[in-house]
Amino acid sequence: MTEKREYRMEELARLAGITVRTLRFYRERKLIPPPRREGRIAWYDDHHLARLRTIAALLDRGHTLTGIAELAEALDHGRDVADVLGVTPTEEEPVRLTPEELAARFEGQVTTENLAAALDLGYLGTDGDEIVHVSRRLLDVSSALVREGIPLAEVLAAGKRVREHVDELADMFADLVLRHAGEEDLPRLRPLARSVVEAELSLALDRRLRKQNDQD
Image (tube, rainbow, N blue to C red; front, side, top):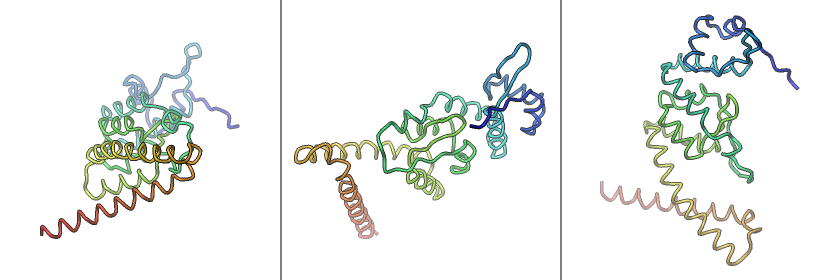
């Protein structure tokens, strides 16, 4: 087990590559959590160091201190990873990211509003200084759409609409299985349900493309 390290203010500032004055400013702006107090001595730990390095990385990417403070507050009040992932096994692969890695994925579009929307959808959870995305596939697809020029806010709004439809599809398939098999068969038959949805979506896209070609 790794021993928890603690630092005096001067050492923390040196490790983070900032001045003590800047560290005090960040603390006053509540960009970092309060230190542990031992008499008149303030002790900081690796959590503070990670947050300071995140602030530096986000500043380098053009985020303002006000924006960083809003993002930090949103994350601090977001659901933790246990709430997001739950206890049910999933076929999706969660992804752990630092805040600066998330910002790099969606260059310039990790705003407070978009972060709050992703937290509300349950796409993101927090685990200390890390962010956990519930699905690598969703993360990769959404970042690819943003790279194609689609605003992240619209990708998230579309995700919310898709969520409503797929919840209905999941309920319909579950009812079908429960009528003719049993609840214990749901995990085994899950790939069949997914294949039906993927095939129907593919056919629907084919129809949409043919319709567009006919109009052109």
